[in-house]
Length: 367
Figure 1 (tube, rainbow, N blue to C red):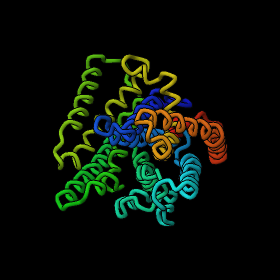
Figure 2: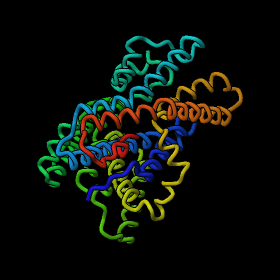
Figure 3: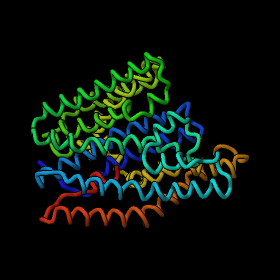
Figure 4: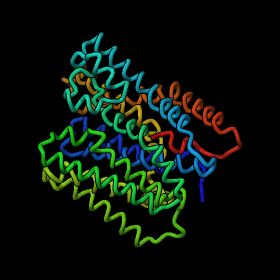
């Protein structure tokens, strides 16, 4: 059964949790709040949403328009990125915020190779506050490479082929991480490289392809089994955070966290109307999830500015001002940039698929 809707509220709640982890980690709580886990959640969620979007399009039209896909991704990601980058450049040039940036550093942000720029240059040369764009680069590289593979797998119409192919890819990436660690690769190389982190996105794709709780929901709840799955996933996540072995942290940690997140994501979608997942659809979380992309882009820039202006007032004051400024930018972006771009994406989709359809592009539009 193929559902159509304009959004999956519980997933906006998960986005809110993800961006909150990153925000509080950067605001002086990095030893307590696992900001890296927030990014991994974003990765798994992105893979799930984009693959669900492609599966829905394929089911309704018998194909996936790559041209429409890439235009939608461009309109979703690039306008907010360009505006926040302009703001960072302006603050750098006018008030000297951060260290001076270089043309190469600026292009690394705008052309989505920020992750490898940080790996090879340590982030020196980028506009202030935009080191966070390394994760956008990982996602953009996935967008470029995954759609042809997804279309091929959908044409096979075999859950086994999809599961085997994506599992093999994830295993190869894990083995590659292990090899790099054993040969002395630094942590940034392991944590930011597309070739070492894209398996988190692929695990989300695997869930969407093989056991998609939105397109093929379970027939009936099994509360004992689902609570057991939730407890196992949460326990595994906690274990990955507590075990500090360096080899584990740089290799298996990413895989086990992604699998745990995928299990919780399955439950959050399949049982969105039941405790304990109902709270993910609360209005404040849904709103924060809806603006999470801009919050992620702008929060560190606002943190640097708040520290430069208000650092003497203490960490709490800096965090409060950072949050207020970030949410203000996010709301303005939502109203005047993201909403018009979303309308344009819908019109573009209709131009590529002129036949009447109930396809809901926004299912994946907030990834």
